[in-house]
Image (cartoon, rainbow over all chains, first blue to last red; front, side):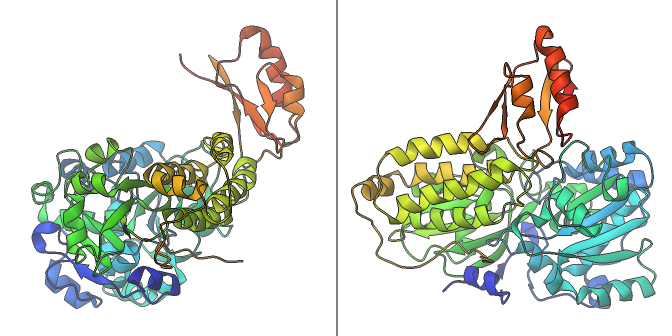
Length: 428
Length: 67
């Protein structure tokens, strides 16, 4: 099986590919940099920067969020600053997406860059409290946090908070609720967390990759960052490449890199592909033909109704039943509903049931009318984007697997392999 | 311009709102409100206000928006 299944068991080792020109998170030597001395020897000390310097750096570099939404970091910083009051910063490494491993990779191999970035944003918003929110498997980072504190390089005390390994744990209001001692489930918006977040204070929740990149920008400057990527989305990003590739794992490539090149960084396809999933289980499917010409930039992928999201790329080989994949993931996504919002709680299981019947039982075309109707009942009717994202995954999948759908309606299936490609984490 | 808004984390689908403002609110098959996207017409505003006040879960609100 592939490394993607290993993400489920917690033994993810993966393959890491990168070079200095590609962005510098992975670098030419992908070994872990865990001790503070090694980190400082490689990257040097953080320059001493004032709050405005940090905001300006983020703006001049064009650094955008790497948690999936791609929102400019400097504008989020300004929103927190403008909210007034004592701010809080959170490094978000929750990564509930089972097909993603890049945040885990960063926290395992580049933790000091993440912690540097957390100090920088703390400085920018004059935060009194900083949290590292990540799975309990990263509890070993307590030692690093203490070491940095003792060495006097962290002005703001950092507290680690455990993120449950559930799909929506990383949604920013869920992160805040969890850190506050509650369940890791989303709140209704407004208010936005930049206005009223942890204990009612303005809160910056930033993905760990964004923070690690900020730590590099602070040392190397905005021009270095802008030397890669696109004008709108400069720099590089991490991709977790899984499925039918030779070396599944985390790779780094500039925004705008052709998807085929991203697949090549992971060793290239192991066989003929039928489809590629981009952006994870709230993301979109592309056909193999679309994947052959798509570039991994927001503007380019928008033409396919897709987005790079947080960098999940899963290649699906021919001979795997796409509908079986859709069905397993929709069942998982229904399970992962926080259960707070009626339409999501009731609707996603009903949708999953219809997809199951399409994938595994004899069914007829009426299932589409029903899926269409049920999808309309969940989209836009929740406190978070879980229903909307789940429906996007399904709708784009049904489009890409249209031939498979036709076969299933005719009681046939193209499946020649029993591989389960997309990883899920079922709890019951 | 005023719209009805639902706090989905609070709504339990009790259905009082749909009874009080049938012009704008229907219920889905699970009992949860299906709200028209349109602005609340002036003539319905008084009913809408009553529904907001009657919601036992405080899940319904009227939101003023700049046109």
